[in-house]
Amino acid sequence: MDIKEVIERHFQRYPGMQIQDMVKLIYQNEFAGGHFVGNEEESLERMKREMDSLDHEKAYPVFEDIGNGLCRLHLGGLKGLGLDLRTANMFFINTSNKKKGSLETFTEKLGILKRCCQEKTVTFPQEELDDYLDEYMKRGYPAVSHSESYRRMYAPAYRIVDYVYCKFIDIFSRIDFLLNRKKTVNVAIDGNCGAGKTTLGNLIKGVYDCNLFHMDDYFLTPELRTEERLKEPGGNVHYERFRKEVIDGIKSGEPFQYQIYDCNRAVLADIVNVTPKRLNIIEGSYSMHPTLIDSYELKIFLSLNEKEQSRRILERNGPIKHKRFVNEWIPLENLYFENLKIKDKCDIVYTT
Image (cartoon, rainbow, N blue to C red; front, side, top):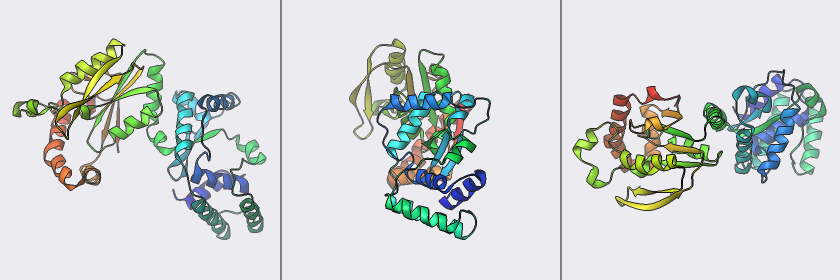
């Protein structure tokens, strides 16, 4: 939603809004939390206190879109999700510490609020709005609190988070469920190249204290790239080495090492030292090879259509690599997906 639609929708949804509540909404749309969050435990304790004060008989929404790729995560809606408060707190911290915003853009958005009043789509008294914004400008455009009347009517208890957490909320809820019941949780993210597997892996790693492994580090060394091997569905990755180094390493519960294959130099290169963690994310095509698939507590598949896949790869890798993807690597992936019915074996499937 653009900011005009955000303003008008929230005014309709919350008819008891005061001017300062609308300014707060626009501020959040531009700056998210508006400040750097340095102390995770203090932030978590504040969240717990707010949760304890809620009316738990009342039905709450979970996410509420406020535009600009952000939403309000209502704490009262978390209970039904099974999402751990620590996870929700990391959504908030990551968003607050990443989102910067611009004073210039913020003042432009305040100008849109004034136009909404002039057009009568929002019915704050024009003179009252002008006086408030003039005084607000003199104070340097600070963050503002909700009005007392808004607090009484709507009892707001939420955090501003990036919309991407809303998009993948089922994954985070499932991980929290598993972590509450299992000693070790291994999550695989497979799917079409360009669908966002690495991005999702990094997103999860930013929320949890976990290990992240990339199947791209296990492509075949030149001597293994035989015609017979490449005809094998899923044979384009050194799954034997991955199982021995990573899967067996995780199962051991002890520190272990693995070696990255450098595709540019076509050699085994850097050695990575791994400290055991309860949560392990394995992302990349072929992560659900038949020799590996039984090692996971959660299996995720990301897919996208051929046109969007081509656009993303061209943008990411350039025309020369794009040609190799289309003629070589995508057909090998599709052979693996189709012959081994990988998508059908997954717990969660997203189309991106």
